[in-house]
Image (cartoon, rainbow over all chains, first blue to last red; front, side, top):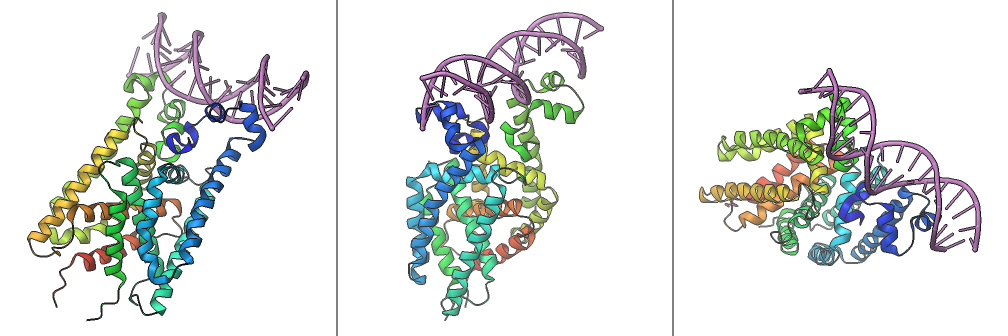
Length: 179
Length: 179
DNA sequence: GTCTATACCGGGATAGAC
DNA sequence: GTCTATCCCGGTATAGAC
């Protein structure tokens, strides 16, 4: 419900009704509305961390090929994907309930992706002249942006095809151009 | 104010106070709150259309180099940039006040960028084996995503440097690899 | 075109019984 | 742990005077 209507657009009464309890019953568990939001964010993060772990367990060479699989999975969970996009936008303003959380999260995601790139460079399978942090920022940006366009207009944007296409772009972009 | 707090998070009273009039005075001009939103969106679009016109007036070869200039301009108008990000996220759900507007807008932006790529291909200055529409989707996605990361954490993400870096990526990506 | 006054609803949250 | 009842605020919008 946060994904569909945003944090502000969702009322405790709606959530309580859908959960089959009353409003005070809901507040008994989460204290207040912000507490509910944080609980929802934590649950979503569990999901994405599970994927990160899975990814780090793979061989570095296979990680790029895992991107479309990531997209396919997200497509099945459009609600969670939308939740993330909506909450990030609602958290852009400093001081909003989830702001610091998403700031930290992006810093950490950039660091993880940058590390992956450094590893690939050290192994000699990625060009030396790319700045790992800049490329990490760019990769996350593209994946986020593709997701937004897909969520906005799913009939026009095929998210799996788009991510597959971008994975090929990345392969050309990062690969050592040995003649 | 819509940029900072979103559509739902902004009250007519706040806007009226800031405008130096009363709430009914405000409604007299825009009918209702949704009318105010549409007026704001139209104003923002005027700005971005002015840029699009400027861009189309340039030689195709210079358009890629104009990207950082676009970023520099957006940096000076962080409010407008944030407005766009926030409103798009608030419009992801079909049926929301601005949904159709942003669906149409993205379709049109993708078409314009794809046309640019086709022109470059016809002129022989871009690789033939890139799908113009897929690449257009990817380019818009990256620019949007970079903007989001910058808005969320402006001290960590340098939007101008990031877009400059991406423009170089694009140049390598699109350029004909003549040996 | 702007105001005052007001209607009316829905929001989050609390008190206290069971 | 869940309920009923209630509080109080802030929201959009309208009526009607000036």
